[in-house]
Image (tube, rainbow, N blue to C red; front, side, top):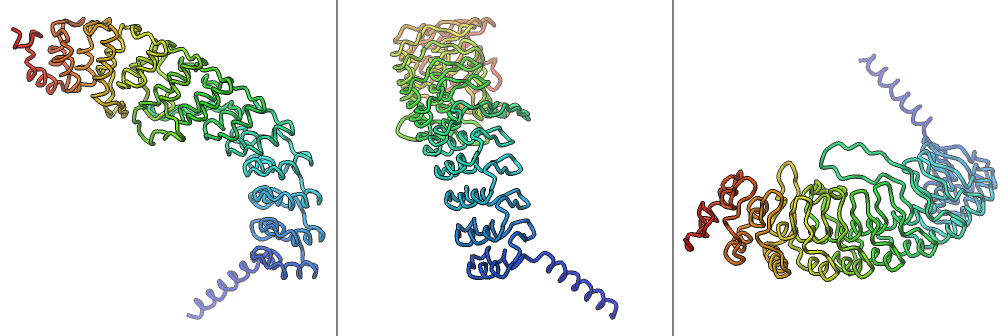
Length: 492
C-alpha cells in the first residue's frame, strides 16, 4: 500500500510539474481572453512580451486577432517581435490579413513585419489578403514590397487567382492596378487515375479567369475582362474559360464571356467546343458519386446553345474522340470521332435543342463514320441504363424521343436507312434503349420496314431474339403482330 501511495504521489508531482512547464504565460492568457487591462499592466511591469504558449503563439498574435490596436501598440513599443511565428507558421501579419485589418497591419509593418512572410505551404500574407479580399490590406502590403506574383506550394496559385476564385472584384482590380499579371498560370498538375470511372481532373496551368469561371465569380470576371484577360487561352486539355463555365452550369457567366468576345469555336483535345458542351449539359447523363451541377441564374443550357449559334458557333463541328470525362458519367463511347452537337442532342431526344441546332444550320444528314445518323440515336442507339460496369443513366423521355424522331423524319431522313452494320433505326431501338413506346411507334405509326436485314442477316425481330435479355422485346414485337419473318401478321 505504502509503495502504491508513493508512486501515486510521484506521478502527481510530475503531472503538476509538466502542467506548470506548459502553462501559458500570464500575458498570453490575458491577451487571449481579451483582458486588455491585465495585459497592459503586465507589459508595464516588464513581462516578457515574446514569451509564447506551448504552440508558439504570443500575446501579439492574440492582440492582432482581436484587432485590439491599443494592446498591439503597447506590445510593439515594448519590443514584441512583429514577425513571431507559431508552430503552424502563423504570423501576426497573416492574422491581420485574415481580419482585413489594414490599420493593424500597417502598425506591424511599421514595426518591421515582413510583407512577404510565408506559411509552411507557401501562403504569403498577400495570398491571405487576396483570399479575404481587403483592398486596403493589399495596398499596404504592396507598398511594403509584397511580391505580386508569389505562389503557394500546392498548385502554384497567385494572389490574383485567389482573389478571382473568391469573387473579390475589388481585390482583383487592386492587384491588377499594382501590376499583377492578369494571365499568370497555375502550376502543371499530374493526377493518378485510380479507377476507370474517375472523372478527369484539371491539369493545371489555369489563369485567374478559369478559376472565376469555375466558381461563377461574375464580378471577378468583369474585373478580369476590364484588366485585359485573354478570353481564349486554353488549358493543357484545350478547354477555355467559356467551356469551364458551361460544364459547371454557369450560363450567365458564359454569356458574359461571349459578350466580351470569347471565341465559341475553340475546341479541346477531344474536339469538343462550347456548343457541344452546352448541348451535353442540357441533358447531362446522371453519373455516380456526386449530383450533376445545378444551373445558377436565369439561363439554362438551351439558352446558351442559342446564344452560341447567334455568335457564330459551328453547328457541324465534329468530335475527334469521345469527350473528356469531366463529369462522373463514365464517358460516352458511342459518340466519338465524327459526333456533332445534333447527334448528341438527338441521342437524348432533346427536341428543343435539336430544333435550335437545325435552325442554326446543323446538317441533319450527317452520319458517324459507321453511318449512324441522328434518327438512330434518337431511337436509342448507345442508350445507357446504368449497368454495373458503366453506372451512368442517359436522360430524356420516351415522348421526347418520339417527337424528335417525328421531326427528323419530317426533314427527310430515311426511316429505313442503314449504318455500315446494316442496322436501321428500329434495330437501334431494339438493341439499345429497348423502349416499348419507341419500338411501338416505329412499328405501328412510323411503319418501319420489318424485313430489312442487318449485316448479320437479322431482321429487327431476329435481332431481338439474338439479344441477351431480349425476351421482353420479343414479347412486345409479338404483341404487335410481328412474326419471325419480319412481316406483321395482320398484313400476311
